[in-house]
Length: 299
Image (cartoon, rainbow, N blue to C red; front, side, top):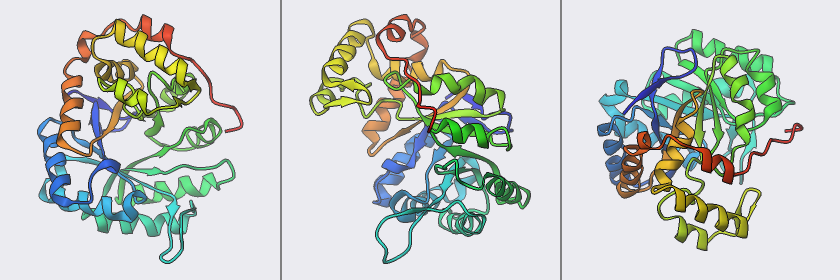
């Protein structure tokens, strides 16, 4: 498994990383997936305190155990829940971030987090206070680096130039190319992109026909446009799953693509697709067939 530098940091993460959100809350099943990922050379695991109300962090911490040093562990903060109250609310206050990081450390059974990410953000947030808090956590050794999970350009324009953030997690795929206009800016600020949604809910896998039958479209693609696009892509590329990974990883600003797996079979499919990406070197057809849209500036 090849590795890439995360921004200008000292962290080098695997091109394919494991997304924790899809892991089962059954520890035995989750363990089999994590073990398989580590054996394949995956060294980056992404989770969040949001997932299963912290249970996901706890399971990952228990599974890693004395292998913690082998893994670059990323989690997120900002979505707050209160016991007995339904739903979540946004809280990016310094006091909550400081409280939440200790809770995540305890659940993850570790004394440091490699990459601590703000799990969203609005232009109204107190960004100076947020950045100061992350810098303080870094100085105290509780986190090694920090970043943000956001698709809001106005937030990125406010956050990145004022901080030492090294990662931006964004949804990006051949069917959602909106982030491309921001890649140069993100790279110029010393950060890397870590992508999610790479296989577009399974539409960019070898099971695309089955997924298409259950789909009414995707993003701005109507059902008809989606069917036409996928059919054309499949006629030009032998392996859509490999194409999805290769399409993302052709971008130097992208350090890793986070792929979830709820079973060993799903992870095996991703690993098999990864082995084929070097054979895909021509993206002319996919560039021609897919939309190049932009985010709305007000976001």
